[in-house]
Image (cartoon, rainbow over all chains, first blue to last red; front, side):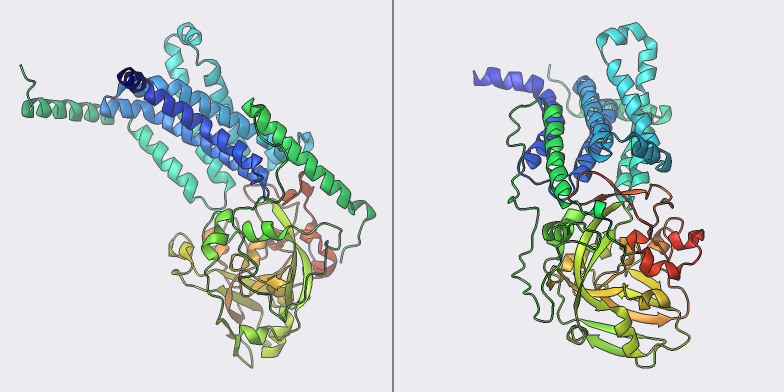
Length: 218
Length: 325
């Protein structure tokens, strides 16, 4: 029984981790709220938590492909969709907080806010990209779009960059958004063909050396 | 002070809308969770916020007048003591507003001296006890942060004009330059080279001599806590909050416009005057409305934060952008 359980866990622990990571921030918001811990500036707090979580999940999702390429760990590719959908969920909550909790659906105020605050624009565009990617994330859409599906879903990088710009434009202290920007830049660099080729060479060289040092027993 | 418009005295509505708002948050969280088991949707008002440094740690000095006000002159409720002491922008400790109180709790505010010098006839170093000899009065001011949130705070302090008169400014003195303590061991945020520490701020001489400009030593009838700029901070309510420099150790009268920390950090975004004006947005965000801490819906920001009557004469030409930047 224990062995069976372990086997089951071994096949699914990454998925479990992703769902836990995707749901925990929401549970945390609900818990803080139920404890009355949002007393000082709830709007700001909820805006920050939802926005930050969306950005973190998006970044982790974008890291999956490079991780699989560098470490040859194919399993991570299968959690990309879940990560992306969670990122979209938090982006939607972030948007809802802005129009509902913060601006109370006051159209005049909202229009004024969008016009005067340039940070709104990259945020909105990033959210729209995530919406399009969430809609087309199903297997059906993947088949229908064929080769262009992959091209479309590369827009996730643009969504990430726009989210960082959005973040950097709205804060007084840009050190934190810069950290996210640096991680994204690194992920993008890993996609350059030359870097990919180098990584590939490094991996085959390493594998070669390892098999030479530890020959598989006959 | 601005006349109280009867329509603005609506404490009942503020209470009610606050409750409506908290319910709104409940509905929002619940619906996004699709979880009925969300627990009590009404937050318990007794629940302790992040960190409240017990007032018993710093007993109210006998020199401070007790809290008397319940609202500002426009009828707006005071922001709670818990919010004022747990939601602070004080980058010398951390950039996290809810993290300052904890990091600042062991900050040493005694002994404390303030050097007052520069273009004055009688330069002098004041101990905090000397400054407490000036009659301390309660001043309820709105504090409007440049980040578009605001509070109503019952400060205790004295007009800075009294201190300046004491040291006899020379006629060449045109500006007042303030400096915060530089002590990275006590203020961990100062070990980052990202900002040009120590914090520096300034006022034009006539701004400093205005009766609204005070040096605060307390709030809510209690001695100022470190997170709020203890033991001595500036309060200039018609300007954005960052002008109200905290934990002051040095005041100099000078003949040239001082460069503040924010002017040095981001010259395109922060100028010397920084007077509140809803018509002049920050280069990156709107200043038209603000979120009053503890209140549900946004409120409109007022020119000079509602202190036009007291300070408008200092800035005769409203179209001069320099004064609102």
